[in-house]
Length: 356
Image (tube, rainbow, N blue to C red; front, side, top):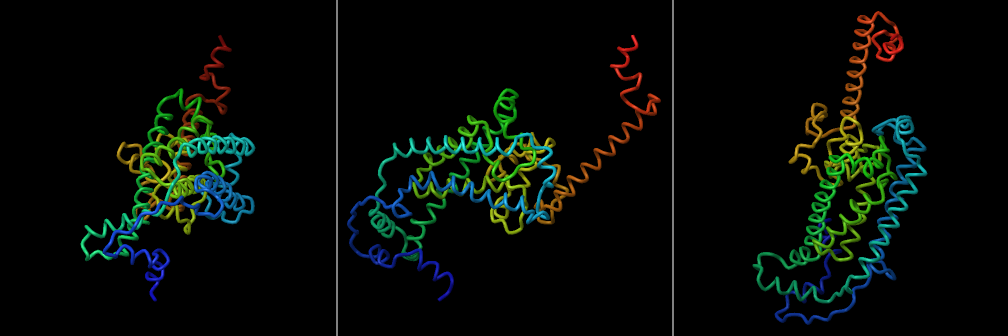
């Protein structure tokens, strides 16, 4: 038996195929849908699993940080993280926990308004498809499409909606000084991002950007509670990964999505703070609206992908240029002023006032 056949056999219930191929439409008998995890409602899992995933996944990166298990894959040295970040680890953990509390309470209220989900109608709907779809299309493909491909398509559309929502709000907060100063600047206290700081935000920003944005996507696409489990958990893991501080060759998120830890790290640096607003999945809004940072384009590999080595070279070249400019400036200043110390120079406005 081939691997493909083995996978299909696990995704398909043979008895269902026989019912779908029958001449008579199957009877629909609705019964309440059981949770994917026995004993727990899917709505509860959709709220709890993302929080568990956040701390579990970020803890892996934290252990890597503390034990220095992957220093060769770090975007910035540990010393730089400790030196440049302005928020303490206690503040970060406290604020993330607070956001999770707000997120969970909002979810409880939302799911309390949701109606009971039922099952038992699916084979009848696929049977209806079978009557109109040409017989050249096998029944098993209709089954896979109904149960899995359509769910995948809905979740993908939700990805696009989340990206659109977060890009718009994120860019708005950067373009308006009041919004940046009072709300979004909190997140940028982490100049060098790390995993469990992914949701370190002002509470209002966190609520609007993440909780409301993901909720809107779920409602617009009409996701089931099980699909919400996938969307919420996957989005959480992706957000943590974007802030993890590592570029890892085996990281599936960084391989699948162009919007990855390096792409988002550029946004956290002072030279890229007005660029790379897209998050958390794609980069098309930055490309369409001209906010994609292009300064690293010359450092990509032959496939146009920004590697860690390329990014490090960009950062080093940029640092070397700044040092060269600073050296030339000081040399020119000393030549003009005749002073070895800029603070002692008579050209210094402070000293001019003292001499008056």
